[in-house]
Image (tube, rainbow, N blue to C red; front, side, top):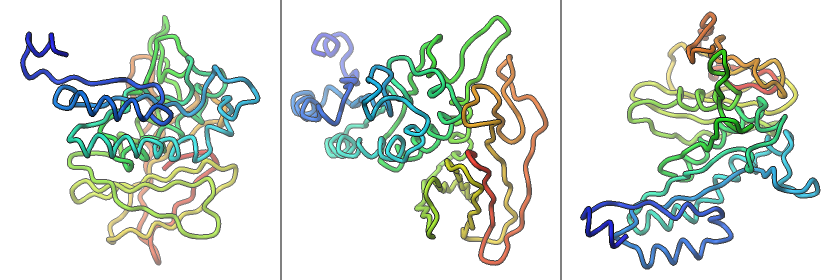
Length: 279
């Protein structure tokens, strides 16, 4: 840091790319104490599950565990203490290594459609927790990569569609709103709301095995446009669509765009969610 400061005065550093900011929070505190003014961004790693864990471990990768709220919303919430530390010291914080399963991923879990639903939920939870930015970890041949390259071109994995759904909900001057699920049967459901200018984007996720119906009581009387994230099954590695389309080998959208227009009914917009889907 001193050498860089002499060579390029004013250069900002990011670090320490800490593998476990929960167990090793004291390391972050110590770094902030001695490096304030040199380190402008704290960086931390966090994964939901671990391919290096033994089968008896609660971190051993399964689809059921990846779909639990503790693996997405709970995972992001573990960074709140680190976020508070960074912001209290006028630093930003970046989740610079994020994915569903560490150690390269697990066949049938990190490359399944479950990873798409997990990704959307986790990124929204990170936004709510105050994280300033995220990098999704990928290696070209790893099972947890959002895409990989073949002789025929790009092969999009389900994870990439989960990232697309999150991105589609954002926009210029996006602002996360307070969205709450009420009722007696909300297990397996997630709801997120984003305001971008005069537009309200609501993302609904159903991680359950049955059809669920959600009444969206957002403000306004405008007609809603509904697009869906769907897959042939929770286990599929490739049969995924967003708004009726899929990503082809050239990395472009292919297929017919499908969106449904729905008028506001009594009390709001009634949205039906198939099992293991997003809208």
